[in-house]
Length: 388
Image (cartoon, rainbow, N blue to C red; front, side, top):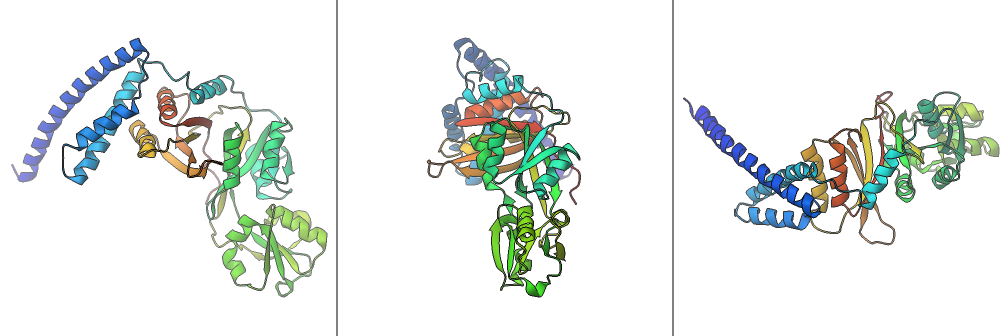
């Protein structure tokens, strides 16, 4: 027997002891769960768990092993909580969980012949996403501002809104995240659009004539490298890319150009001077489909939620440990400041899963307990087609 085989035999023997100790521990924590059920005590006792971890990590002077022990006991206690939650039915008294349960109970089927709103003018990428998700011929209209889109849903003028939430080059669309936090609406789908910006102007206008370029701020940012080769051009942000094309077409300004899509050029009668002004040829924008009512569409495999964490050490780590223990793939995390509360943040999460799967109820119970505020924003199918 060589040294490696001997070491592995020692590990196997230790693992056998660990398994028996773990099973004994779970037997005792099961008794704790029954006691909590009988006495109406919540499963999660965060202060107790912090004391346990502190006591266990104090048993070694090795800082690396202290971190390992903390991770080990966080996992063990998370498993114990899951076990106890099968005995203790709790969470309906929590406002966040109760709101989610009510929304789930009142979920509607997809609306037939929907009315859809988006931000921008016809020909913008948001309209393209609306057509891509709902199909050609969808009844859709544009609104000047993102806030107008949400207001249209609130007034009952539309069944859905299609909004950009993230660009592969410039990141998250912060205004949309803030409005999702403000309105208690739901994400029921997503769609990916490849962004191919073009520089366009009136017929007969050449590059040498251009003095001013109009586009949405995202279009200008995504075309920054191209625009930097024309430092004498003035850059003017507009409400949306297609709106800049409409402005150039209607103004008749022969020293102006717009950066937007080929579709907008055709729609407003402009000539394309330069194709692919965005420096990232794999530039994509992810759009979300927002509904005032939760929907549970077939194929759903992604969950979106937001939460506010208490301002204390380790609070975010506890949330992330929950996802690790449950084997959930965390796909995105985004933070936004809370108005009027300096240095406090809302966190937006996207993770793999189905709200109707048996284990998800316990995950949401625990997420609600660990956070100061929890809202489920939706469960939908991740878009998989079209991206290159």
